[in-house]
Length: 283
Ligand SMILES: Cc1cc2nc3c(=O)[nH]c(=O)nc-3n(C[C@H](O)[C@H](O)[C@H](O)COP(=O)(O)OP(=O)(O)OC[C@H]3O[C@@H](n4cnc5c(N)ncnc54)[C@H](O)[C@@H]3O)c2cc1C
Image 1: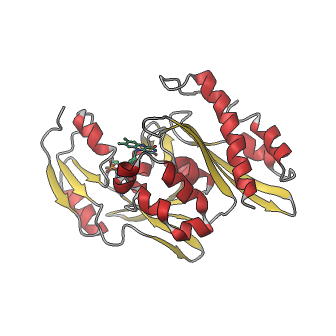
Image 2 (image 1 turned 120 degrees about the vertical axis):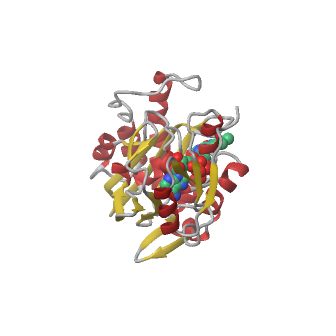
């Protein structure tokens, strides 16, 4: 199928994008187009106007500022994967980006587009939860910041209004974090993806944050595993024991042609253990 007819406008700044969004009835932002265009071709989305944010100066790029990593929303997966800064101070984000799709998808797809779209199998959401990242958004009313755990709310549903633009993601850099994923062979989307971040002092786990994607309607934290790890020795044994409860409390678990609910639940344990061991190896 082909999409319904639409107008195309290119925004030159964040404020210009917001003005265009307000002026257009039925307008929608587009970045890489790798999620939106397939929906338009299926006529599941029929925007009257597409407002392109991909080339807004300052909306892409990766920098360290005031002790935080800041990634512009229009930064492509390829740029994230190749970032020397991220590889040095927060390697889990770059490791995750390289897992996304194929080179064509990584060349066009953006961090902001992925988070705004919130596919239940997308990779980044798990990492944003594990890093306790902040999502920065702007509308005509001004700036708004929400933590990742308040951002992902349901199936393709996020804490972002139709009149807002996602501008950037900010996070304290964490070295001891890793992402482990069982992905679909063709698309590379996560069947189960787990990101884990550890804070270890004097050989003991002070705190852990674990984000899960692919298993349910939206990405969530595995808080029961996080609690089970607190105060435990930073060892493979502690991780193995805590990972055994991973997924047990998930009430609703996806079942589709890629994996049954039972298999996914088993894989949540396996990949939680792998992600935690990966994080531990980075200490
Ligand atoms: C073949 C294929 C394989 C893929 N494999 C994977 C994979 O393995 N893992 C994975 O995580 N993803 C995968 N994807 C999805 C890919 O990562 C998309 O690029 C991403 O989900 C959307 O980013 P985009 O920039 O293309 O967004 P777009 O398609 O342009 O937009 C998606 C949505 O986000 C909104 N949006 C975009 N930018 C903003 C912004 N700055 N502020 C507010 N709203 C905005 C749009 O209005 C739209 O609703 C795959 C896609 C394809 C086609």
